[in-house]
Length: 310
Image (cartoon, rainbow, N blue to C red; front, top):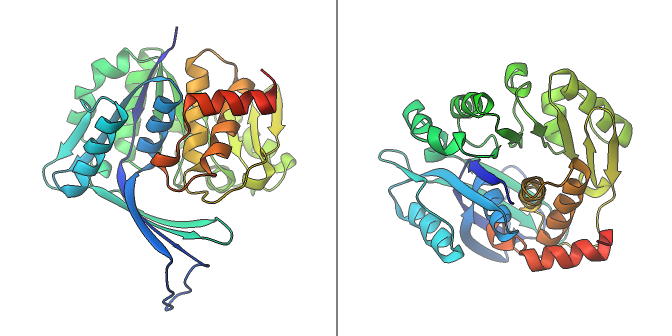
């Protein structure tokens, strides 16, 4: 039986340009294309979980504006429940300004969280019954930390497993980290929260040890071209990246976290979940966009079997 996932996190509208290179300070360059669509780390990860077949309830916050309707229209088209899409009467819906280099597929992103950075204590209290009944709580750092801390308190009191993707990179208190069952940074985020520059297996192990020492039970670090790494404090594993033709890396981390959390919800162990995360991240970069690029379960199972033989 699938475990219930609650994703508490951000929705922003992605405003994405594609061009050769990135402009230097003071420079204007010509773009090749522009696209607007649904995004935000929390929303993307919830969509990734949902498309992968997980039982996930999305909780986010938008403004009463046209961009907020982008969220609800997209979720309804996907078949996702919009009951927990909260509306802020004063703040606008968040946006992400995304530049994608068409030659390297690398991206540069500025996020303005706006409404999703304004979860109140009353908002989180209203979500208490939902969180208490969850099996897994999935969060990121694109919403206000006060909301994350309060949701964490509720989850821990009720034995809910907590997965924190500490992105975008910012310092996180040791007290909050100590409450986490799984922490899933990329190499840059791992450096921010541990002080260890992660650029090899040895440094990934060193960063993981810092997090384990802070009380984190399981550490997962995505390493870009080096693959993905996981440690439970006793055993660790580095998976190489899967061979794909990347055209847009924007949503890779979110796809990874969605696939990883889906696998946990189906009872898989840490290292099998790492494989599912690897598969979802790889499939995502073969498509344009963020939420629209999240892979479906049929794709995931086929690619998983090709690469991991099960």
